[in-house]
Amino acid sequence: MDRDFAPKSESDASELELLQSGFRYALSLTHHRADAEDLVQQAWLNLCQRYGAATSRAALYTAIRNLFIDRCRRARVVAFDSLEEAPADLAMPAPATPGTNDDLELLLGALRPGEREAIYLHHVAGHTAEEIGVLTRQPRGTVLSLLHRAFKKLRDAAATARGVTP
Image (cartoon, rainbow, N blue to C red; front, side):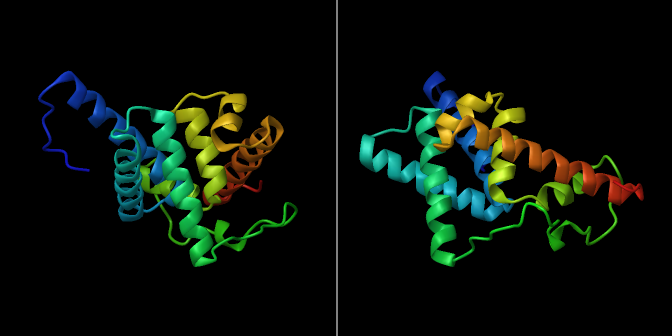
């Protein structure tokens, strides 16, 4: 995102805030900066072409999520993880200093996109499980399960990184 953009009006400031929020959401899904930028740009263009403007955070999030799902389907990157087995990608590839951004990035990288999305919407955007269910078109119980599994994976991976048995 261009950090040199100086809003000229209040509507520019609200659009910039909406774009930044959309970027953070896309980053929570993709876990890759360039892919997140591409998703936000494409979603913004789609909304502007269809409705003339992107004024709603919900509309932008929905457009970003739908584009992300479409890209995953096209790339055939749909992974079905067993609930009983810990995925192999939970192993920490390189030691990171505990409590740093690198450490957090490694831990979040171990989660599936749906789990990262649920954590982002709950803890960063401040939505309840019911609101997340409406945004993602999933039942509240599914959202709660995603959050529970994601936190368990994060706790286990953090404990492993510290050398503590989970």
